[in-house]
Length: 257
Image (cartoon, rainbow, N blue to C red; front, top):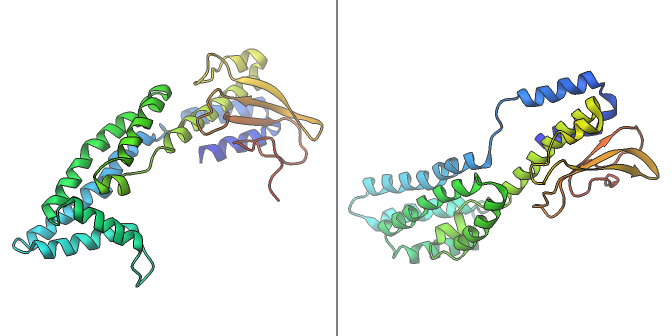
């Protein structure tokens, strides 16, 4: 959503007067504090780990002397998380349950132990997702490898796949600051542009004119951050004409037909 809003400002940059653009920038800055990916991790734990643990505890309370029946209920819960067509048995469901059942030793207590092994991982992940860029990049590789190599099938198959979320967040934070830099450029020229630093660089954003189909159409701002495989870029349109993409890895290219 933030990228859409920032792209809308960039696409219509030439239509904003300095006063209106200043008001838009101030509006962005006055918005409520943005949500962060790290804040989602406790929710992930609540809606999978904690929910499943409560369900298992409920099954054990209802069937205190019949663990086989409890395991039937756990089987339904676990395979229901994977999903399959109506009336079908998904091979992925079957494989996952087989792995869980074996790792748990065929008992509900074993499944509970597998779940409890997951709790510290959520806490570690929350810390990693809140870390600065360099620290995050070093930590997430090691953490992801640990998840994939875990002997706990619930960790391997069901732990939240969040490795791509934080790079998207870093990119969006850069884009937001590019809008701030472009607002200052409109208001105060080059000194204004240079007053806003690239959060992932050693100073201001990279700036250059942008030519599309032989016509100077505006300027592009680039960040040193390339965690998604390309430098984060936003092109601000200063002259109307044929459309082109202003944001993302295809920035500067004509729209797909």
